[in-house]
Length: 336
Image (cartoon, rainbow, N blue to C red):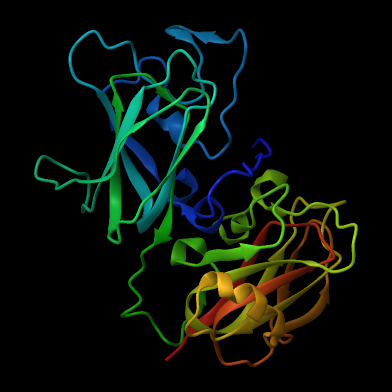
């Protein structure tokens, strides 16, 4: 996996929420009107799009994305995408990186909630109206629809290529009948946890620590710049549900010369306010996990060291003084 370059101009939703169109969450490109030049599946690749000069296949120039042939009839092209988790969509990135003379002039996005694959009776809601696109760039679109959806239909007018589709949102999980004695990973993105804020994400998005599975390399974790001043780096996470944290995993796998020396975790049960108001409050939250020494390329487990704070809704994860962490797991029981 290529090391991602974080766009400093990207809106907050790109760093805070899960990419529901990530194949690692189970997303799939189900069907497309055409993908003659580049397959639809490539559009969902979690790696940044690349351009390889001189690389061709049987149909023409190899492009890293979904690309349709030049349309010689009326109409437009489309691609049907199954999201990795049903979720409330906060925003999208329609990325045309490396598509210059072959990008679509416009695109729109429709959404639906369906059991199984959508069919002729599926009701679609337009969440992104027809929007002008430019070549070789990111197009960030905020979505204000409060419904949870399972599928998207990407329409491009009339044809062309989309390098990457990112669908940022909060997975919807039904906790109504969940056990109050079983333990769940309350920091798991697929369960609905999300990143509130982080002080630095120079080499990797802090939201990566909430992703499922094991990280494949350094680009799949959170890594801050080298700190040249006193203090430590931090990330604040909103848990999927209020709960009592009983076991913690801090995963530094793949981080060797750049892992944090130590870590601590603070936590609190938060009511009222906004996400932005938590940054100051979090400095004064009680300690859930006292300072712990970390090792390179290792999975660290803490259980007896976890303080009995009762139910909490948010944590502040502090890495001292800086460095990279692959995953953070917070196992706990749901609040009664």
